[in-house]
Amino acid sequence: MEQRLNIITLGVRDLNESIQFYENLLGWQRMDWESDNIAFFKLNGLILSLFPADDLAKDAGVASDGHGFKKFTLAYNARSEKEVDDIMQTLERKNVTIVKQPENVFWGGYSGYFADPDDNLWEVAYNPFLQLDDQGSVK
Amino acid sequence: MEQRLNIITLGVRDLNESIQFYENLLGWQRMDWESDNIAFFKLNGLILSLFPADDLAKDAGVASDGHGFKKFTLAYNARSEKEVDDIMQTLERKNVTIVKQPENVFWGGYSGYFADPDDNLWEVAYNPFLQLDDQGSVK
Image (cartoon, rainbow over all chains, first blue to last red; front, side, top):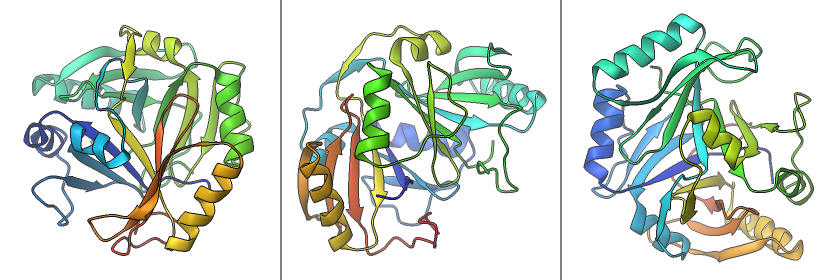
């Protein structure tokens, strides 16, 4: 098994609300693959997929009950502290839930968190030790 | 905010057990960035990070309670149905929890699921509609 990942699927409560969030608030574009029941966003070499949580549980054959902290986070690495601030301030003005305002963190970076409509946590961070290529992928 | 993702962090119960899983059972290599409290695996343009769940909750400033279905899945896209079978059979022989044996699925692909020690669900799929580049990233 190669050391890679192709799709992350978020199991959502309300597909349309989640699509609105990623399209209108983050400003991302969907792939033209959509059906009525799933949405795909092509990121840097992988896909973010939004799919109703009950359907996702059914696809894997597991119980769909779950609540509280989901025990995973997603991180977007910006190219500067200023970019972190700009992104977080823009999202705050759009009434996105800011979970943690950006601050200097113990590992030497600068980071804040926002939440999507299903409380999936996105960290927006500047990490001076992480190299990004022109497309923003980790080198 | 560009349309990209740099890190996915899994909040784990037992860091050493999770490291063993990803290193020894999936056969993946850690980055040499490790501290005693976090592990990083460089994937295709992004990083998979393993971090104790309580510390992850604390970092985001949220409550750490959570149980049941985590409402997200990760997918590895293989290049053929045979590669899906080979991976899943290899993992099964290593006593990895197989959540769903590979089967043909309604959208035209072939897919199964396994679980890591924290019940994070990994789908291993062949999707004839998805183009992968030489590194296995989504084109």
